[in-house]
Amino acid sequence: MSGLADPFGLLRDAAYGAERLGRSLIGQDRIRLAVTGLTRAGKTVFLTSLLANLLAAGRGQRTLPALERAAGGRLRAVRPVPAGIEGLPRFDVAAHLAALAADPPAWPARTEDLSTLELTLELDRQSMLAGLLGTRSVTLELLDYPGEWLLDLPMLNQDFPGWSAATLARLRRPGHAAAMGAFLGFVDSLPPGVAAEDSLVQRGFALYRDALRGCRDRLGFRFLQPGRVLNPGPRGETPLLWFFPLPPGARGGLAGLMAERHRAYVEAQRREFFEPYFRRFERQAVLVDVLGALHAGQAAFDDTAEALAAIAEALRYGGGWLDWLTGVGVDRVAFVATKADHVPARQRDALSSLLGHLVAAPQRRATGAGVTTSVHALAAVRCTEDDVATLDGRPVAAVRGVLLSSGRSAKVYPGEIPLRPPEPGFWDHGFFEMPEFQPPRLDREGGAGVPHLGLDALLAALIGDVL
Image 1: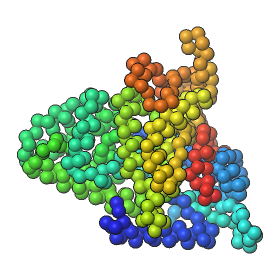
Image 2: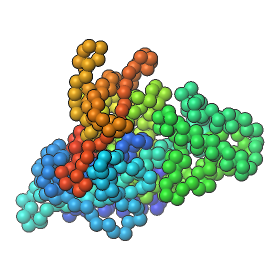
Image 3: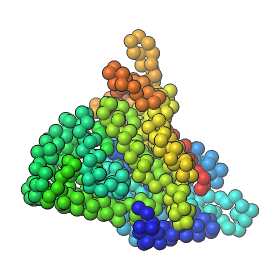
Image 4: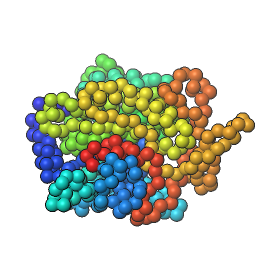
């Protein structure tokens, strides 16, 4: 990852830095924000709401009050930047808003590939020359990509034996057995020096791929690598993906082929994704479905915590001499617990506290590197209202919304959110309900914005300093 190891990367970083400085001097700042996160944390919904609410704020709607305060009330207009010659798909906010405007409304389709979109934010200047220079322009560049790919970042610093050992150790834990049994039985039965027969490779890869899918879909696990096995992108499944971890001491043709494909995959991710795209974005929003992890049980929750730690370790937090020299590197990072509307208002602080404990060590490292870090709980699209339910004869805080499964309005007491990672006893008698709610039906044009919880505070923390 080092610019010294990649002179072309250093030149590219220097060009990005020069561009940022030049734009700032003439009042045409650019903010690059990557929306990352664990699988099914709601990145597409988040970006749809962010874009719709920013566009509505540019038309004078009070959709993002905290961001407006950060901008000093000087935001005058927001408009999409017309498509140019970029080589990435464009984030289709109109299609996602159409899903929310359907009858009945539906959640937008999940992210399957990289996409990007730019907005121009026009603001009044604060200087005495405002009348002469006109408004100030800030370009907000957004990047959306599948959550599975985020977990490939830690692989950039691992060789095949190291990756295999760490992966198999994780997958042999008791909570993984229901999905991993067939694959682990296969690799444990391989002779140490087995040859790389194509049928054997295909069988091993198919077992591994199906096991990863089972861990994700049935067990709620997130720390699953490589990410493109679960979501290969528009090119589909290619031979580059046909590798799987092997036990320590593996040798012979199969071990050699697996190591070769692992190395080629890591280099392809570095060359095709990390360096040209991820590396350019100086602001990061890392979305996490903490509530879903609690609902899935102790094994899934511990897996989510471990995945967060690995992500934080892999992210380039900046602050080193190379980033100072090139002007590249993350300035601000926000860890975000999504679906905060699934719990009543009195429990949202607990949700933030729980996420804060999960990322406490990464925050200390980030702060030491000179990066501003924050923790948030939000609902990109609010689909419940606070209510009161009765439990064992006593009133408890609850939420009311339309259930996705039945289309009926229901009052739900989700359970209590722990302030910190739960003790073992929590899982013995803990009760936590995580229903799926139907989104509110919205205007297809998004003219009035999208109802949310906390999106404005998050944006103020991430980009308010530039505005």
